[in-house]
Image 1 (cartoon, helix red, strand yellow):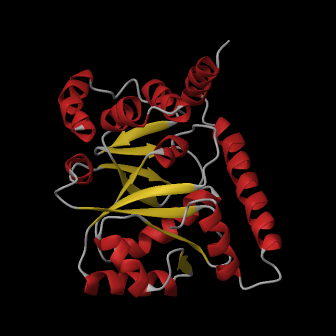
Image 2 (cartoon, helix red, strand yellow):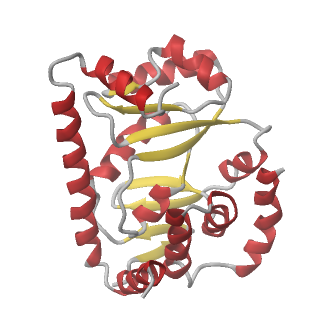
Length: 195
Length: 63
């Protein structure tokens, strides 16, 4: 058996759920009821086998109205998550100004979900949120950017040692499905982040 | 051998041997348990959220 296979365009990872997966799964089950999502950065590499620790999991969601935000916030609290910033009336001004907010399980700080609000003005993030790649582990399905996009973003924008290593891991892990033409397509889009 | 070469070697191995995911799972869960114990102990004498927010401001995760 290989580490992954592709079924109807979804990357299926052939492994058991970890406690980190279950944390993210529980969080996304609530988010999915209210809006779309995209998991980016470290968790993409870790879920596909990269052996390193992480303290936060980055998730992009659209910039939503206060009413939708309140409903999402209430449901996250009911599901056992707390927000670092404070209650929903304290957290929404951060969110509406496109500042990330963080959630962890009750009586925990790490791992936490860094919720990154995205609208059309954040062109690069808006593009990846609009072009999801499905990934699945056991019964946990979530969206990630196209693999080529994730690799280039780490190589061109983030560039820390762990990011370069994550990109290398993804290049090797998914070499059979990587489409070189997509790197050229995504490069100018990603470089807009530097302008 | 550089660290990046180990990353490549590990990825090559795990691709064809998903049994290695079991080691990775142990590492991830061990880190989570250690972190959980550390912070529960750190804030055991105070309200968790209050203590956590003071700590998070100190490390710059909360402005």
